Length: 332
Image 1 (cartoon, rainbow, N blue to C red):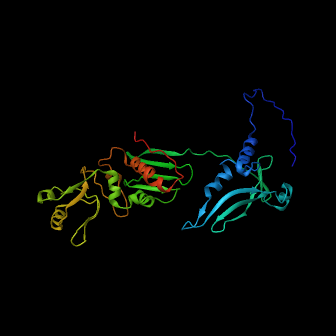
Image 2: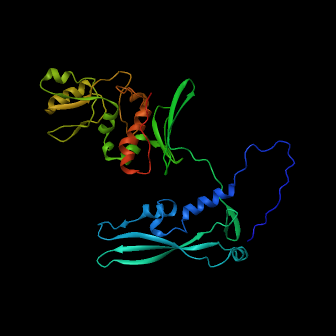
Image 3: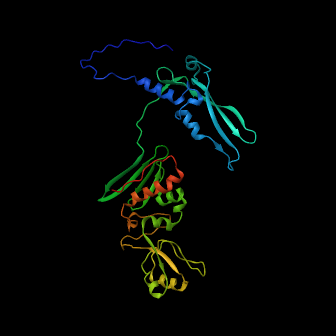
């Protein structure tokens, strides 16, 4: 299709300060850089379609005895022209074939047809099912962590949003009942501890999560005097009777006077407890894996939301979600 150049008459009184850039060239140049169609396979840069294929391959089987390796891709000639695609309600595209190598005892190389890749014509548009379509540019949120503080009924509510370079958005917020919850891509809310347990084995137990927010110490049980000092202290891990294997007390629970007598009869040698605990800030991991914000402040100098986000970014997410590239958050 031949583009006809027309003269534009300007009747405005104010002249242009700068020349209007060629906005169509931005689209065509970007798509050409994405395909790298005119570049030799061995000289293509690691960007666009080439980068996607390099990232996807090689593909290995479960025991890594066979793998599928990417070599190059080829873009053929279109079967129909632009005008024919408009009349026949077709997609104006070119066949995309990828050369792959199956590494086994006898390696095999061949071209695999993946489908038709749309062609951008002169005006920066595509022909999709006979209709011209264009790519609309949108604003992209910069990767990072955004913290928000809202005031609800004279109560400060904290929340944060983790925006990765690619992948799902993660939101962490504190509810009206001071429960720390997580949401992934506008999904339903679930406890933040459940998210930590799913991301890393480091936080699979209650005691692992308690150690994130409190300083702990191991108390040796030598006599009745040392046992009595455990009263009103809070356990870190589950307390199990070494004789019977019975669970005496769950993790995060307070040692009452009755429990002191049970511990005295169990012949336990040492117990890990929280080092220091304010009477108003009790650290208990509830059933259902809910952690209350007011009960996580004990010995933590930084706000629990920021501490939890740092734990997720530096320890849990970095192990499984390689697409998220975020620096730890400064609590100041």
